[in-house]
Image 1 (cartoon, rainbow, N blue to C red):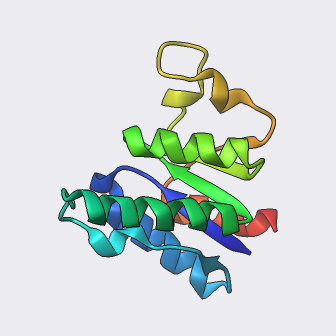
Image 2: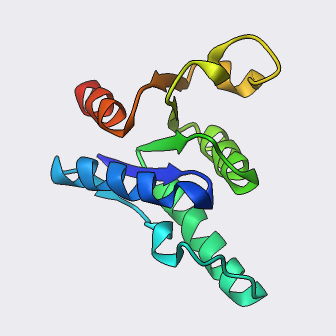
Length: 131
């Protein structure tokens, strides 16, 4: 199974942990943007290159995993995944984003979006059981 993980830069350690758990089960990470963390790149050429790699990684993925809390780039990646009709797993440690209130988005309720609640190990377990 090929996967891509989108999240905020501040969540890079959780992204790495989840990636390790999935890769140890034989899954393939299409692009690990955490290699650029914790430093945030600011020059235009580097940002363009990273953006192209992330876009291609989403295209090559079977599933896209969104770890919250997310940042503005994560919402772009989420939109790309939806537009490409990818299966999206939206993951948070509790149900904060999964209530019909101001914390949610209409797109969190699309049929191709699966909402997962739990810590990193719980999320990995649920993902691996899905395939």
